[in-house]
Length: 165
Image (cartoon, rainbow, N blue to C red; front, side, top):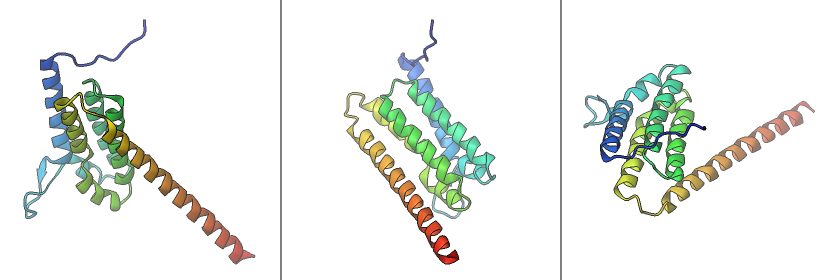
């Protein structure tokens, strides 16, 4: 008999799951006040991300717990895909030295994912068009960046071959 993941069904289970997600999102993105910034906050994601390599992987893994807990609440797959995209974008850009650390202070993937969960729980019958549009825009952006990088690599190799010849 295949194992299927357990979906949160009762209202009390859903409330408990949402409370856990809220706590994780707060811990990752907003748990530490920054003095002198007018109420700006950061979380352990930004702090852990300062550790090269392993820090971003660890905070990404914790962020995936937010996605997993949200997926168990019966969200549509496209909403879960958008949450995964947020988490993977945070992981990918967050792993770039200096730039990624600044990005972690601004992007706050777990808080964005929490907003997606809350939005869906408040209006479960709404259209998923905005989620499809966001995922499509992300795919187009990734393809454009990969294409640009590929073009730059080919241009650089062509320039090097031209300089050597």
